[in-house]
Length: 238
Ligand code: NDP
Image 1 (cartoon, protein in one colour):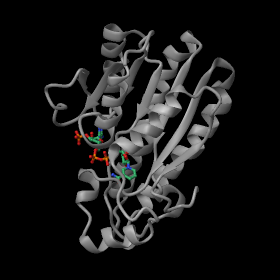
Image 2 (cartoon, rainbow, N blue to C red):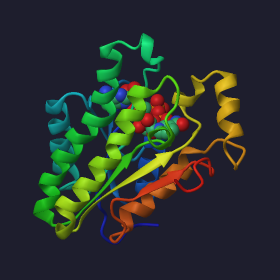
Image 3 (tube, rainbow, N blue to C red):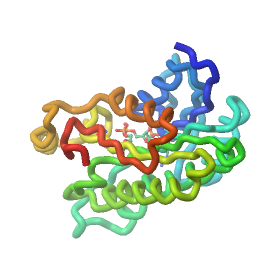
Image 4 (cartoon, rainbow, N blue to C red):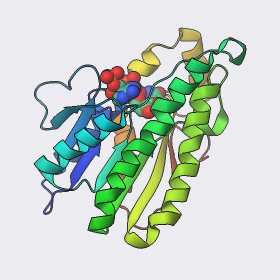
């Protein structure tokens, strides 16, 4: 299916995992998609523009947007997906472990959202989706840094919703639970079983199932400041 008016979409961390599934979903709908990658490029047969960008570096963020804008026009859909973990119990967590996770997951989203809204304000239209986590809402041992960063995205989205609502710019949050990607392949079998025990679906999510929620929010003009869990029921709607 091809969209009558393709949108210029930018997905951070779109080279693998959830970001890649999201990018494929928009491309399949006929949108013009830019993905950022930090290490390896996305698989070669993809119909995306790929731009190297570390979200902890605002100059690289600016350059990625310039390339996206010059190829596809002003970015009107942003998916801030890039994220990383550095799990340790608090007593063993260094300040660097804490701040680097905040820098990637929370400040990284700030950098890309701030850069994106410049063009969105001019267009008087924009859709921003931030990828958080159920950990933001429930917490998890060893993840004080990650949970704080992902919970921060909720306050960020709700504040931005109020700042930019009258300009038809929306900001919403998707909170995935256990989803099959490289990030969760690093879990021990014991951690995985414990998470599945708390999941009514009884199975992990697939990245495409997160993409379903992102695609919905990118088209939903009257859903604002929402947190949509995609967690197999683990949070029973929260
Ligand atoms: P992956 O580890 O498969 O992918 C992480 C992505 O983030 C990669 O593209 C990676 O790039 C990118 N990334 C990490 N750090 C940076 C950085 N500093 N600058 C730019 N890009 C960066 O994880 P997922 O696909 O699972 O995760 C996607 C999002 O979903 C994350 O925000 C994660 O926190 C969240 N999430 C995932 C869950 C899961 O169960 N999988 C559950 C809840 C939330 P590179 O390839 O270069 O490292």
